[in-house]
Amino acid sequence: MKGYRSEIAALKRRIEALEKQISRLEKMAPKKAAPTANKESETKLRFKPQGVRAQRTRLGLSAPKMGALVGVSAQTICNWEAGTSRSRAEQLAVIAAVRKMGKREVKARLDQIQSD
Image (cartoon, rainbow, N blue to C red; front, side, top):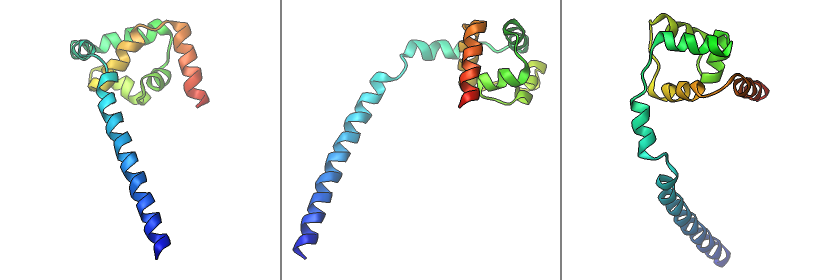
């Protein structure tokens, strides 16, 4: 009985320490979050079907490769280019990041995705 009590007390101390650690990490998380300027610029991003197609052809990518780079299917890329659907806010941010990439960086990123 005494052994159980000491084990329970040790577990309670461990839980308390872990809860404090979680609390500290939660307080640190907002500091590491993207600044508000980036969030404002994300909302200002415009989506044009012609822009997606132009970006894809500039980089020399097929729809499946562009989809892998952005994190969507090839059919989604085709739908965006045809104008039958639009991208979500998270995907707009990724598309904006792809706009800033060159062919070499895209190729390296695709090689990394394929190796995972």
